[in-house]
Length: 240
Image 1: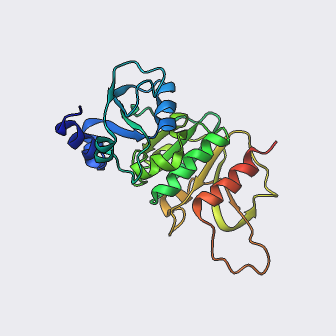
Image 2: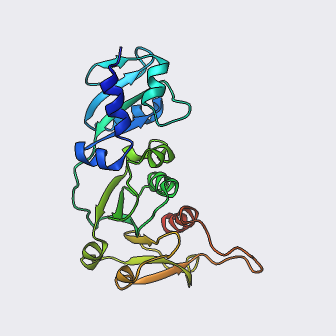
C-alpha cells in the first residue's frame, strides 16, 4: 500500500516550483516510463498496478491500486503506472550537428510536439530560452510521447548561446526566403519564435539567414502553428 505522504508528494511535483526544488519530475504511462528507464535516466521511484509491467528497473517497483494511481496522476485516465525521475543535469549546449532553438515558446502542447519532432528528424539538441515553458510540465511530457528520453534539452540565455555560434543560424519568418529554395546546411541552428510575437528583438541580431513557409496563393490563414511550422522546416532542412 502506498502511503498518503507519497501520494501527496508526487501530486506536488505537478507544480514547477516543487519540481525545481527537488530536481524531480513525474512520467506517466507504460511507454513513456519504459522509454525513460531504457534511456538510463536516474530513477527515484516506480509505481505500477501490475507486477512485471516494466523491464530494466534498477530498484523496487511499488505496487498500488488503480484508485491510488488516480490520486497520484495528473491524467483523467491513468495508464497502469508512473515513475519519478531525477532531472538531467544542465550541461551547456554545444554547436555540433543541427540544433533547434526556441525563443519563449509558451504552450505545453507546442513544446511537447517540437521535442517529438526533434526526435523524429534526428535533432538531438533542443535549446530553450529561460522563459520557455518547462519541459517537465505534465502536459509537455504527454505530448512528447516518450521522445523526451532521446532529446537533450537545455535552458539558457539565448543571446549568450547564439553570440558564440560559428555555424549558420536560421530564423523562421512570415516573409523571407522560401525554405524550398534556400540552401539548407547539414549543420546549423534553427530558431523558432514565440507563438504570438515571433522571434524577439534580442535574438534577431544573431540570425544569419531568414526563411519562410509561403502560403498557397489565395489562402486566408493568418499564420501556422509554431509546431506545424517547425515540422515543415525540419523536413526541408533534413531532406537529402
